[in-house]
Image 1 (cartoon, rainbow, N blue to C red):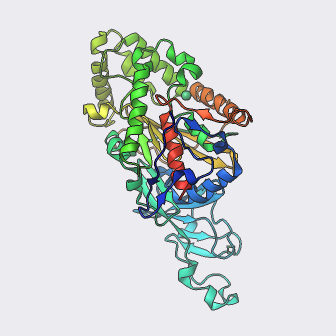
Image 2: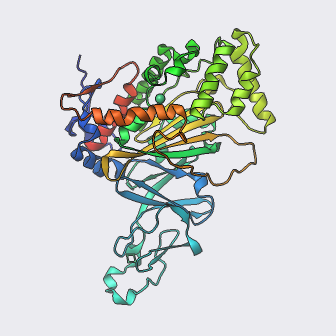
Image 3: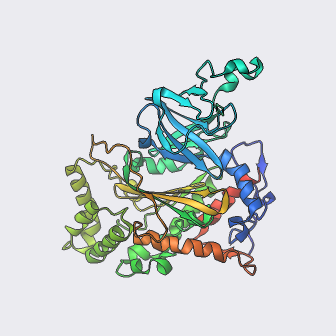
Amino acid sequence: MTEVIPPVTYGDSSAEANTSAAPFAITDRSYIPPQRYFNRTFFELENEKLWPHVWQMACRLEEIPNVGDYVEYWVASYSVIVVRSSPTEIKAYQNACRHRGTQLAQGCGSFRGAQIVCPFHAWRWNLDGSPSLPMYGSEGFEDRVMRPDDLRLVECRVGTWAGCVFINMDLNAPPLLEALHPVPDFLDPLLIADMRVDWWKAVRLKANWKLALEAFMEGWHVRGTHTQLTLGAGDDFRNPHDLQHSYENGHASLEKDPNSAAQGTVKSSLGLGGTADPEQTISYLRMVHEQLQTSVLAKDLHVAESLRTCPPEQFSKNFVKSMYAWNAGAGIKLPDPDPAVLGLWSSQWFIFPSFKIHPLFGNAITYRSRPDRDDPEYCYFEMWSLTLQPEGHDPGKPKFDGVFEFDDEAWPLIARQDFGNIERQQRGLHMPGLKSTRLARKWEDGIANSHIQLDRYLAR
Ligand code: FES
Ligand SMILES: [Fe+2]
C-alpha cells in the first residue's frame, strides 16, 4: 500500500514545504529513487538547499584547544574556517577573502600573531572576523568599497555539542540544540562530550555521501556482510526484534517531533539487562574488539573475560558492576549507572544529514560523510573511535591517522566489509532497469527518514 508522506514544516514555520516538489522526491517511504545518489541536478539542489542551511559537525573541540587554532571544514565545494578566537569562544567564517575571494586557510593549523592573512595580497583579519586595519594597499581603492563593516569575514553560526563544533552557514537557522532535539536529552548523560579520540581515519569512496552513511544506518546487513558476527553471538546480539524496536523507535522520535534533525534508537540491542551466556558474550565482544577496533576496547574485554565462570543469569549484572569498578580504579568516571542510561549503551544515533554516534560502555564510534570533489559519486568518509579518559588526563590534540583505501588493512575488518559494499552499490544503482530501490520498514526505516528530511530541505 502506498503511504502518502504529508508536507511538513521545517525550521521557518512560515514556510510550508511540500516535500514532493523536489525532483526524485520520496513519495512512498518504502522506495528510494536511485537518481538521488548520482543525478547532477539532484546533487546541485543539495548544494544549494541543504549544505548552506544545515548544521554540520565541523571538527572536534580538541582539535582547536588554543587561541588561534583553526580547522578548515569543507563540504562539496564549500569551505568554512573554524577558529578558536578566545579561550571561551569559537568562530566560523566562510573561507573567502573579501578582496578577491581567495581561500584564507586550508587544512588545519594556528594563525600566527592572531591574524588571518590572505596569501594573495596580504589583507589581514583579527580572529573575531574584523578587518585588521589599515588593509594593505587601501589607498588604491575607492572609499566606498572599503567600509570596515563590509570587510568583515562572513560569519557562520557556531554551536558545540558532544565534544564537537557544529557550523551552519545560514544565519537564520534555528539554534544547534533546537535542531538536535531530542538527541542531547538522551546522549548527554552518556558523557559523550567528555570522550576523546582514540583513533581517527578517513576513506575516499566512489559513492554518494548518503550511500556511505546508510551502510551504517541499519544492523540488518550484519547477516549478509559480517557473517562472522552472527556466529557465536548470543540471541541478544542478533535478535531481529531488537533491531525492529530500534528502528521503530527511531522512526517514532522523528514522527513525534517532525522538526527534529536527528533520530535515534532508544533500545539497546546488546541486551545487557537479561541473561547472557558468558562464553558467547565474551567471544562476541572479542570479535568486535578485534574486527572493529572500537566500541569494545581492550579494557572492556579484559573486564568481560574476568567473568567467564559467572552464571548466565548473573553475567549482565556482574559485567556492569565490574565495568564500573574497573573504570573507577583507573580514574575513569563512567555515566550514572541509571538503568535508563545503561539502556542506551549500544544505541545508534543519526544526526541529519551526515553524522552518526554509536555509544557503547564508556566509548563511542562516530561517523561523518560528505560529498567530495564536487561530484555526486565521490564522498569523503571518516570514523572516530572515542573513549572516556582518566580524570585530569589530557591526551592533547587528536592524531589523524590518515586517508586509507577502502580495502587497506589499516581499516578494521568490519569497516572493510562495509566499505566493500558501498562502491558496488553505487555502480549497481546506475542500471537502467533498476527503477527504484526498496527498504524494509522493519529494519531500514531510518534511511527513509533521512531522505524525507532531505526532501524537506530541497523543497524549501
Ligand atoms: S585576494 Fe585576498 S588580499 Fe587579494
Ligand atoms: Fe556493517
